[in-house]
Amino acid sequence: MNVAAIFIKTYLREITVLVTAVVLVSVFSTLAFVENQTTSDDGILKAAIIDQLYDGIPNANFQLNATEYFETAGYEVDLYTTKDITVDFYKKLPSMDYQFIVIRSHATAYLPMFSSEALFTGEMYSTKKHSADQLSGHIWKAVPYNATQIKKIGWENLSNQTYFVIGSKFVDEKMVGEFPGSVIVLAGCDTTRGKLFSQALLDRGASAVVGWDNTVLSTQNDKVVLALLEKMLVNGEEVPEAVSSVTFEFGLHQDPVGLRYYTMDAI
Image (cartoon, rainbow, N blue to C red; front, side, top):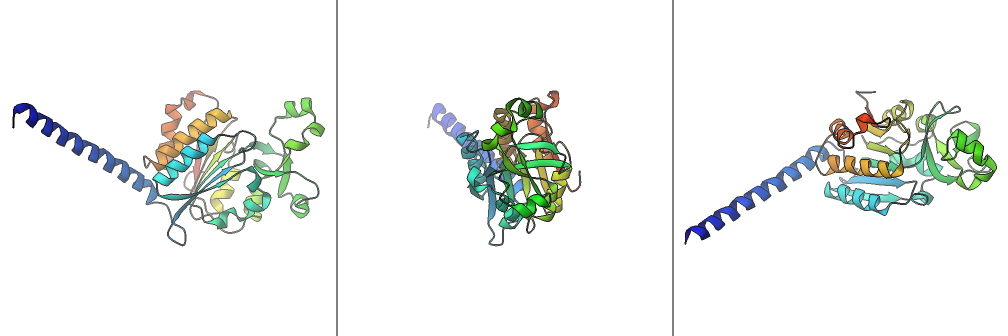
C-alpha cells in the first residue's frame, strides 16, 4: 500500500471516530435532560404543543421544528390548535400526563379581577357560557390589545376577538389533577412578568415554568422559544442553562424584554 493510500485510510478512520464521538455526545446530552423527566403511567414521555395563535398568527415552521426536537428527545407529541383550547380543556390539562408543555398564546400581564397574569383560551367569550365560573371570578374576558388600542377600536368592535382567559385562581381551584413534574413554556407576552400564575402552576405539580417578562413580537417569540427547545431537547441543557444560553445568543439581556424562569427552588 503506498503512502497516499495509508494516509487516506488513516484519515478516514479518524473522521469516523470523530463523527461517532460527536453523535455520542449529542445522544448523551439529550439523555441528560430526558432522564430527569418523569414518564407517563405507560412509560412514555409525552409532550403537548398548545397553539392558541394557530388561527390568528399561524406558524407551521414553529410546530414542525418543535415537534422534531421533541421526537429527537423521545417524546410523543400532541398538537392542540385554537379550536381545541377551551376553558374545559385547561381544566383537565394537568391530568393529561404531559411531561413537557409549550403554550404559544396571547396573555396579559395583569387583570384587576385576577390580580395575576392571564392566559388566553381559544374559546370566544359569551355571557351565556361557563356562567358559574364567570360569577365566581375564575374566568374572564380579554382581547389581545392594550388599553389605548381598546379605547380607540371600541369594545363593541372587538366581539370577534374577545376570548375567555384564565388566571392563577383558575389554576388553583378549577384545574383537575397534578402536572407530573412538567416543564411548562409559556410562549406569550408578559406570562412571567409576575409570579402568581407561575406559582400556581408549580403548586399544581410543574417542575419549571418559563415565559416572557414583557411584551414580545410573535416573530421573536417563535425564534427564541424554538432555540430554547433545541437547547433543552437536543443539547440536553437544563432550564437555567438553556434560558441563560438563549438570553445571550439573542441579546435579550440588552432588551426591555427577556425570558424568566421559575422553579420551586427559585421563585
